[in-house]
Amino acid sequence: MQFTTVDASPQLVPSKRDPLVPIHSHTVEEREAKRPRTAEVLLEEQLPRSLIDAVELTKETIKAEEEEQLPQGITETEEEKQKHWFVGSIDQGTTSTRFLIFNGHGEPVASHQIEFENHYPHSGWHEHRPMELLESVETCIAKATEKFCADGHTVSEIRSIGITNQRETTVLWDKNTGEPLYNAVVWPDTRTAALVRDLKTRPGAEKLQEKCGLPLSTYPSSVKLLWVLQNVDSVRKAYDEGRLAFGTVDSWLIYQLNGGANKEGGPVYVTDSTNASRTMFMNLKTLDYDDDLLKFFDIDRNKLGLPKIVPSSHPTAFGTLARGPLKGTPIAGCLGDQSSALVGQCGFSPGQAKNTYGTGCFLLYNVGHEPVISKTGLLATVAYDFGRGRKPVYALEGSIAVAGSGVKFLQNNLGIIKAASEVDSVAQSVPDNGGVVFVTAFSGLFAPYWIDDAKGTLFGVTQHTKKGHIVRATLEATCHQTAAILDAMASDSGHALDILAVDGGLSNSDLCMQTQADLSGVPVDRPAMRETTALGAAIAAGLATGVWNELEELHEVNRKGRKVFKPQLDIKDRSRMRKRWERAVDMSRGWLKDIDDE
Image 1: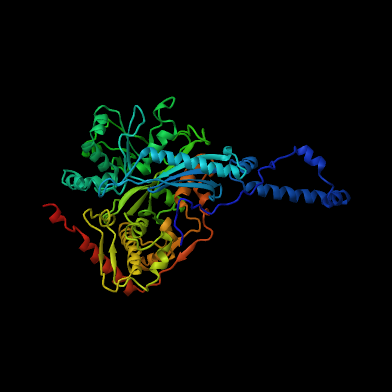
Image 2: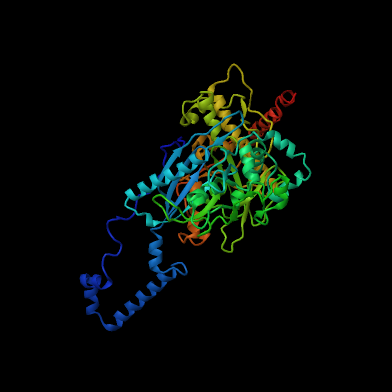
């Protein structure tokens, strides 16, 4: 198996056209004059007129049928141009940033990736430097565009770009200068645990999820913002003076890529509804900020800058790049990373679901045009909103804090493996987990449990335990939590999933995907091209700028070479393993909480 590294690139598709040869090198008259007298022409000169007329009638019929195959409203010339359009995609994640360029078939043709530093100033704290995020994006755009042009293309062929980003991560900056006022607080950061416990005792706490779809936890942006306001004097001062700008990573990048505070005509300060739905400030039904939600978190919207919420796909709302090799190119799409992966998997119909195995693990289940508020510990969120008269689409979501980061833990913290690529071989050095269960609650447990005070706990260790047992137990932890989420989704939606589409770095592990199928009892469908998160943002941008016109055009995108893992574990063994996992979860709950609170 192979995990994404700074050198990793998707399987690229070579250019189908020699860029040095123009598509139309002569006029119609010149081509006709130079055309040799073919056998067909010579034969026609000798045929009776009646037979020639019959041949011409047949030709006209064929031509008419060919013209009917063109999409309505697109001339042949426009269709030809469409084949040579490309879309860029910024994929800004937790550990790295990438920029990919896709062709009209949804295939990546150029890319560049940069890893950046994560900061952990205290136990449970997780931060990024906002300017490092911006610099990584601009570098990736420049490098990928250089590769694209080296292949014979020009920047004018890139129709637009989309952005997909890590969600909930909170950035705060000065509206007057555009300068960040504090490090970005990253989505799995747990410094807010005590604050969340206090918020849960406030009147109205139990009603929040009905409006915003999210339960109170350390996860959403709202509690991160509130903690910073309560603990960082310079940020509080900016808030009191009305110059504090708040945003998720998409807002920060769009603001800066358009020129920041100095942009002529004013800054572009927006977010899309998939990102806004992760703040706990947006009402799911109105897709706008809700005064009751803001009031609960002590936020005065007259003091705090909030980005305008716009659809995920729009030709002008996100502005244009202000500098770099793609200067002037429109930013036409924006999706939170997990919504983007659902779009990249073409999960456009109710009942379709995907799971992304990245740093964390995130499962989205399309529920259609009305939000479903979960009763089983899941989140309700916006799947995507493509505007142009289309209704927004909602999803149920199950979030797991530890997936690929569990493999990194084995490598960097315990030294059990030397590289992520070893995970399958080490796990397969033993036939099973040897009775070991690893609850990877490094940041508490997310869906469907939502146990903030759970701690990472290893059960079943004996003198016979080997490295392979612990590696297997780490992979199984992610698969057990996914299976629990699938059970919850079946309960909320009333329909068990038929097949699970997967992507993300950890989905490269055949062992992990087979384990997932075995523990959930659901077939797992893995595409050959797994850059689905970046593809989703490209689709959003392409829909806004004519690369694609309707969702129906996308159903065959990325369908080649998919592999399906079918369940092989019998029901009795599956039940026994699931029960052991649930017992371990219960025992990890509140570990040492009473003692630590003394």
